Length: 190
Image (cartoon, rainbow, N blue to C red; front, side, top):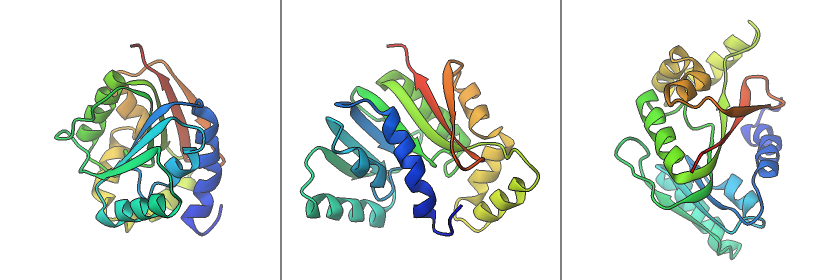
């Protein structure tokens, strides 16, 4: 594991990239600065990244313009029960997103994505497998601005609890090289 988060996420983004089919229409909730969509841009038909952070979306838009990328867009919106994503997407993505929002919003958004997507791919924090991982995960989250939501996420049963509440039962779970992060791949019935 590396000290810098960006170094830890690169192999996971590669893993997610390998799961997304070429020529897909992709939406990403909680896209941050757009790194995952930029990685996918050469292979996808179109992409839309949504995040509430003014600075992160601003950075993504600047990078898009600087690199002259035309098949992805970014919008700044608060994601929760008040947000209604529109369109039909081949793939919906969320990477390290559902533990930073309220669990009720996470369940709502997952159910909405189920209606709008052929496939959902989520990279999320899962329950620590060992006693050594639990304090590391706690320390990582304790001083974040979303700690209250993380505590609720943990009590809810991590991503597995949210997926169960949203009534997802048919899913494939991919391990990552970080033992407390998993990738959940869900095929949606349309």
